[in-house]
Length: 257
Ligand SMILES: NC(=O)c1ccc[n+]([C@@H]2O[C@H](COP(=O)([O-])OP(=O)(O)OC[C@H]3O[C@@H](n4cnc5c(N)ncnc54)[C@H](O)[C@@H]3O)[C@@H](O)[C@H]2O)c1
Image (cartoon, rainbow, N blue to C red):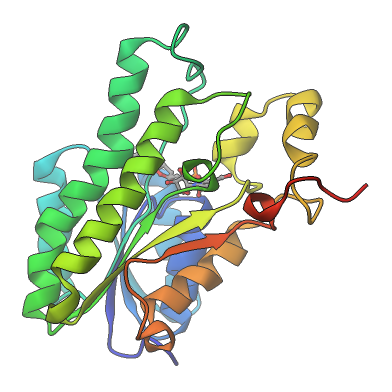
């Protein structure tokens, strides 16, 4: 088992990448704090882990609120005695996120609060406990859109994920000599609720699909395996990396027929 006796905190653990990662990390021996704004989904994730004989607890949090982020980190300490893996993964893609002309300021602010400030607050409260626990790994979910511009815009989301990449790099350097590694995970387009609700017609799905060299959307479970690699010692010499797991989308100029 790759995460034996480790404690992991995963935000956005109620569905998609977060849920699959919680399940996989628990199978690899970690005790998992599942943190999410969606209580029903989070409790379901914990139930799934316990049904497999794993160890997990749910906490309801809005990652854009400091008190909530403090609460989830405190729970890792009181329930499991420390923290080794912090997966800042919660994120939103707002339906009304468009270009600079038609995107409301409130949509921009909300997206930045959840996607950027949420990562900042996770680190603000989580990193001291990782230090106290002897070190570990921080993983921040960015996106392929932080690497490429698109004519089908989501201006707030794209800006937020660029900020996650930049912040992850700087965190990695600051904590490099404290036995704390920090990497971003940049998924490609996935078949999860988040993207499928945004690409809500076949036409929109196909418009995106045409750019993916592998010719399919990725799966949350495929991101969980990448997150496990970043979480465990297999990636012990990796920090400040922008781990792209994207079906080839950022490598493509023209895709196969
Ligand atoms: N799906 C994709 O194509 C894709 C691509 C690149 C990056 N990502 C990123 O991956 C991460 C996970 O997304 P997913 O695809 O698994 O989507 P998802 O919608 O299945 O999961 C996101 C989770 O975050 C939670 N969440 C939303 N706002 C929150 C808040 N304020 N506080 C706490 N929890 C909150 C949701 O309840 C949900 O459980 C996100 O950061 C997303 O931006 C997704």
